[in-house]
Image: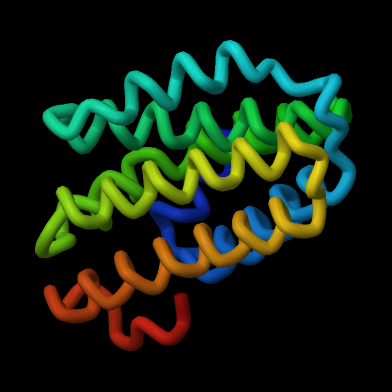
Length: 163
């Protein structure tokens, strides 16, 4: 699946907006079906602590970010959801990195993303499923809008609203 999505992104058969829709579908579903007893909170907390280093290079931050989303989806205890999330993570990494590198202030963006990850983790751990799903949706949409606007400003995308 990872190879297929990578090829489709490379040949522009799949647009960033398509990836956005799939991520929203998978991640909000997982949050709405999560169980606090299923989450690996120790591993998530360790990952978040690593991400909290403001000197972390963009590429390493994005790898950890993607891993966070895979781990969070595992709280739903549907192995196919986390497998799909993992495949998607691998497939979109280069594309995600390219878009992130166009951001004018990565420090501000990464700080916001870190705060949002902590908020999502707390909501999932506390069993507030709908709140966690809403936080994830806002988190994912916000990042896609921000990176889409940066790509549009760089002349890479014809219209950031398509993101």
